[in-house]
Length: 131
Ligand SMILES: [Zn+2]
Image (cartoon, rainbow, N blue to C red):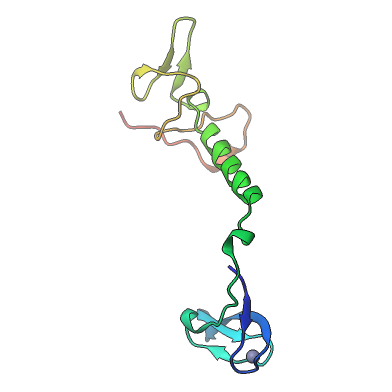
């Protein structure tokens, strides 16, 4: 979101400052104010944002990056990396769903196969299903 505002108090195009509001040591909220004159805007609706075309902020480049992240995430859940996946010369098998799968399938019950010699095992041992 754009931080540019046109402040009704000082009449300048300035930036919106967001400052944490503390009660004792606890952060209780956020205060919005003009970086030019310190005018405080009580709510988000009061902030006089300078309107810009939002498409300029969110470019095609950003979009494709987002898609790549999504794909990487999907690839992360491939059956071939799952602890329940077994493969032999005749079939690829999901031990959890007890059905044939493809190595490139994805699954909502995916559990990453622990890597040999991985220290990740010590932190988060994969939860074994109780059945
Ligand atoms: Zn101002």
